[in-house]
Image 1: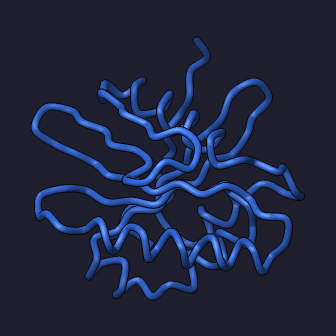
Image 2: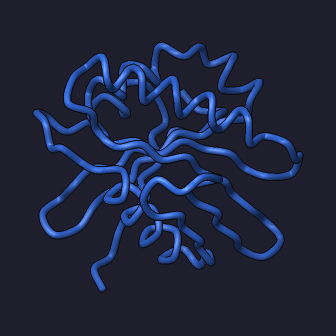
Image 3: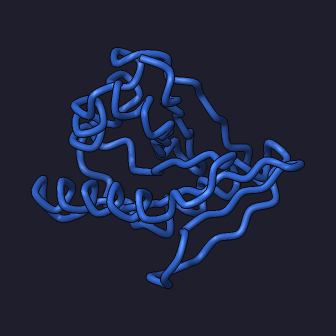
Length: 152
């Protein structure tokens, strides 16, 4: 099984440098698969809803800690990326019903997604304690970058 790395992205410059160039056409399930492999590699038990099933896309559990993640893929246009981003925000907000759980959104490391996330005020990320994961293909595997709610 290939190894998947999780890279801490500490500021806007690191996030922009992590983005891939050009269109990759990453589907939502590819983002979910990369997240599953990365989290399992860190010791999490990971439950994924493949396809378009309702409910949280990813539930990751380690010890007594739970993380809920919404995932989106690439769209065919920049406007679709914007719509997917807003949809992911709405979905994760509706799932934030419990305290003591980490919440996040996983997206392809497409430059348009990167800019949408960076335009979201840090104050909002902090208020929601919302993490962002960026998935970047690297040959036969993927890197996952993490912008934590309290960073950058």
